[in-house]
Image 1 (cartoon, rainbow, N blue to C red):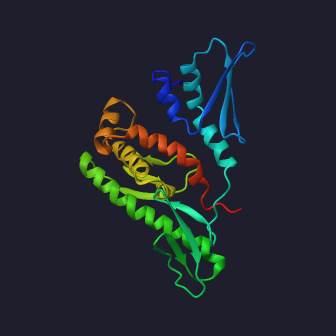
Image 2 (tube, rainbow, N blue to C red):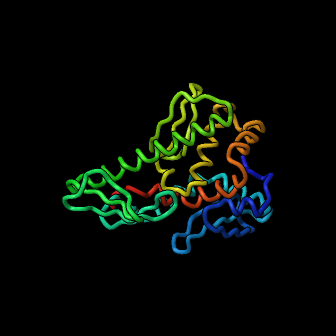
Image 3 (cartoon, rainbow, N blue to C red):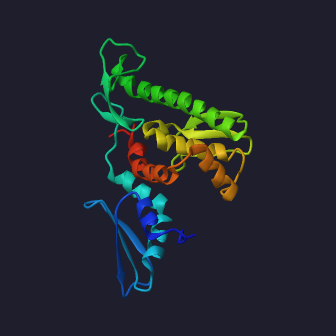
Amino acid sequence: MWSSGRSEASLEAALPVPIDIRPIRSARRLRLRFDESSGTLKLTCPVRTGRRAALAWALDQREWIEAQLRRSLPPLPFADGISIPLEGTDVRLEWVAGGSRTPALVEGVLRCGGPQSGFDRRIEGYLRGYALKTMSREVGEYAAAAGASVSGVSVGDPASRWGSCSSQRRIRLSWRLILAPPNVRRYVVAHEVAHLVHLNHGPEFKALEARLFGSGIGEAKAALRRVGPRIRRVGLRV
C-alpha cells in the first residue's frame, strides 16, 4: 500500500539515498533501479504519476532498496585492522598475539587475543553479548514505563527484520542494532515493547511508542534506513 498520506519532503527524507524521478510519456508503469556509480535511485514513471505518489511507491520498495544497498557496499569482516561501527562510532579491531581471548574495548580499539583463526568468532560473540545485555536493560526500562511484562529477550540475526514481539510476550532483536547509534537502537526497542501492549500498528500503539521513545521518532527511523545497509555488511567475509 502506498504511503501517500505523507508529505513529499517526509517521503523523500525517509529514503536511504537520493532519488531521481523521471516521468516518461511512453512509460506504462513505475520502474526503479539503483545506480551504484552515483549512489542514486532512478525512478521512471508515467507522466500522469504525481511526485508524491511516486515517492510513496518507491518507499514501499524499501526491502528491495536495502538489498541493493547491501550488495553495493563492501563487506566489513571481523578481521585485524578493520574498522566497524559500534553504537554509531567506528572502532578498530585488533588481534593481539599472546593477548587475552576475551575481547576488550579500550579507547576506540576492540582488542582480542587467542588463535587468530577464531578471532572473528570471538569478536561476534562479544558483540552479541554486549547487544543482549544492553537491550535487555532497555527492554526492562521501557516495559516498566509501559506497565507491561516481558517473558524473555533474545538476540539473533534476521535477514530483514530488526525486531519482533510474539504473542507469548517474547522480544527478539537483531544483535546488529548495537552497531547503530543509540537513538536508532532505542527506537526499535521501544517499538517492540509497545507491541507487548498492542499487537498492531494502530493509533493506540503509535501513541504508546511515542510516549516511550519521546521526540524524534521520525529522525530515528530515517537514521535506521541510512545505517541499515552498512551494519548488515558487518561481519561478512570478503
